[in-house]
Image (tube, rainbow over all chains, first blue to last red; front, side, top):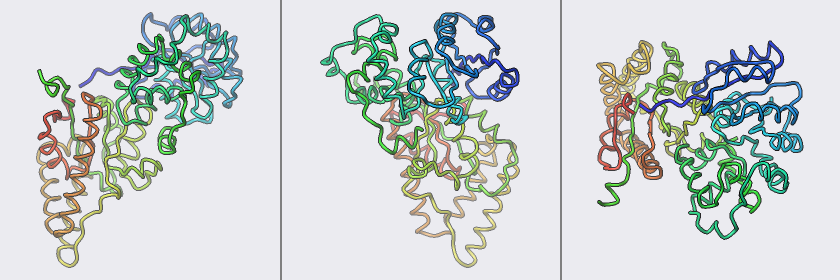
Length: 235
Length: 204
């Protein structure tokens, strides 16, 4: 039997009732371990454990970039998942530039939420596929965002020739903002296999992270739309 | 060393259910099944549903084990669903006359087995497992040649789909959850493939 990997989860919600509701709802979800809840950023620190991937679900009346900056500074490598009222391109780009790793709408389902928590917990960007391409293009075109997110120059165009057909496909799905699970379900392979392909893609592109690879894909137009079949499957 | 030997073997476990009785009450809490599969934590979960049902997310006619336990679990986790059913959902074998009445009687025994199962593991071990298999085999004989051919074709399709996915992603951990009637056929058939290692579900 495989060792279970669970995602540590911290709730940040200013309203007591919401905080307790999230705890009640998410504490029984498989592969998620609720480790604490706080009403402010300062309270988060007590739940952090160095080198243990953690997701923070942020449910605040107004999700501001300032809050994302503050959280990013306080939580270094945690996944920051913001609950937003709707998928507004400008708002989401601002949040991501400030350090958020994902956004999820209050209209999304419980399944979407739990999958998003697991994904941001392991460092993935979580965006709705409907606007992911636009978000990533905006980020890739913004010099400041690139500078903030990458310390290295993206690989040149011709390096893509080194990618296999499967890797090119995965890169394009990544560029559309799909999570590892979405990519795995689209290709009907395991998430671990997708992760292995991504590591190979990072090496070949000379990038260091999923974010850089996604930005690379957006910048160089590797954002083909999924088929209607995969869209239906992977909403 | 040949490439074949270097290739990782793909562990596959087959878990049987009495899933066809989706209008029968299930005595155990489906959370038990969710917990079982959560603990097994497979990479890929092969289910006997058609690609069309999966594409349309049309789960209305699926048994509760799928509809209320396994599909929501997969939706919320990293478990990837592999629809391995054929073009059409498998039809229940039927017959006219006295054979039909005997089949109905045998099915009531199967329903009884489901009603009295203490948990999802019960139908995969011990007397209950063999009784269920025998009842299904008898029903199949009574239903005649066409039904037998249909069952054989459906089983072959299930096996082929599992083999394909094992080839596509060698080394990943595959859990197949199908009606218990297919278990005795799928396991030995998969064992013939050297790249597949059929394991008890507890050892996945």
